[in-house]
Image (cartoon, rainbow, N blue to C red):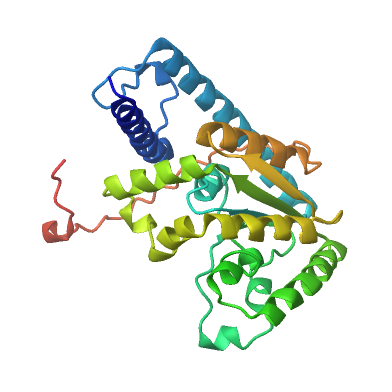
Length: 307
C-alpha cells in the first residue's frame, strides 16, 4: 500500500469521525436518555474503547452542566456580572463549547453575543461602543462568540483597519478592560488553539457535510491562505493584552470534546460560586370551575400529524 493511499484513508477516517461527531452534537441538544451504551454510530458500531470514552465524556459533561446551573443560581443571587470571551481561528470549536455552556441555562441569565460585521454607522462610532450595549447587568453572564478582539485578528490580517486604528486598539483595550473590572464585571478570556492540519480537516468536513456548509464563508477560505499572518496577529494580541485584570487562557482544542470539558471545568474554577439553597417547590392544584366550558378548535387549525 502506497503512502499516498494510506494518507487518503486516514483523511477519510478523520472526515468520517468528524461527521459522526457533528451529528452527535445535534443529537446531544435533544437527547435526554443518558445511557450512551445503547447509542449506535451511524452504520458502524464503535469499539469498546470509543463507547467507553463517549460515555465518560457525557458523564462529565452532565456533571459540569449541573455545576453551571449552580453557578447561574449564584450569579443571580449575588448579582455578579460575568463576561466570557471566546476567540480562536475559524473552526476552532468556540461555538461548540458555547452551546454546551448555555445548553441547560436560563437564556435570560446567560446570553450569547455574536455580533455581525459593523454597519456603516457603527464604523463611525468609538470602536468599543457596539460591544458596550451587550455587557451584563447585575445577575447576568454574557458569552461573546468573538469580541472586540476582531480588530487584533481578522481586521488586521484582512486590512479592514488602518495601522493607526490597530495601534489605538492596543493602547485602549487594556484601559477598557481595567475599567470593566473596576465596574464589577469579571472578564474571562479564552483562546481556542488548533493546529494547521486540524483546521484543514474541519474545513473539509464542512465542505462534505451539507448541514454545515453554511458555516464555511469566503473569509474562512481566505484564512487558510493567511494562516501565518493570523499566527503573527494572535501572538501580538496575546503579548499586548494579557493583563492581570483580564488574562488570556489558552484551550488546547484539537480534541473538541476534551476542549469543551477542560474549558467548562476551568470556567467554573474562576468564579467563587457556592450552591444556593432553594425553597421546596410545591405544585398547586388546578382550580376547576363548574361553569367553564372549553371551546372546540377547528380541525383545519391543527398541524398535520405526519409522524
